[in-house]
Image (cartoon, rainbow, N blue to C red):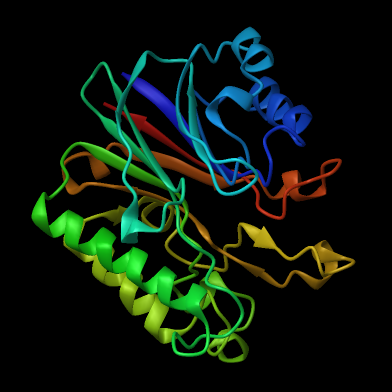
Length: 262
């Protein structure tokens, strides 16, 4: 069984329905995982997506904020959702394919602007969320699973445009990187993107604040595709669709892809 997975923080699936459909029509991933849908499950514009072949979906919605959804051309059943750190947010949903592979879709909290949990509640929530992820993977080590999503951390020096400049900027601080690494290690997760593209700068996010994002190219790799060791060698063909950042009314994130032969 061969399939392609894409992950994309869409920053409102209803507002950006046209570019979701564009991606489905032009790139046609078998499974599309969306974050920051900003709507309830019932508000996802499923009719348009079903016409493009995405007949199956699992989702965890929330009015106006957060929200995660997996849209699939392949039969999929709900494999649960978890409220990490007990925040009451819609930030995780899992779906299971007929071949037994479980796909986890995560939207880790951004963490605000100040990298200090004593001064910034949101930063503390982010660290707590990652700690809960770590503990859950330790308690039940995942198998035959793929984890994707906006993890809101660029872990490597070449995952940001300037490592030294961003060491005190939320998303690249050492404490965040350490927390993400602990969660990754606890599950034995393999970073498929970096397995396929081990060297060089890679970005999946460019700020709306940059008037010329392409020329400035001050990006970060915040969006990830991981797999458990038992299926990691089946992952291949990773790529990031940078061009999507220039589409009409774009998200500040772009889709990240990987293929799997299982």
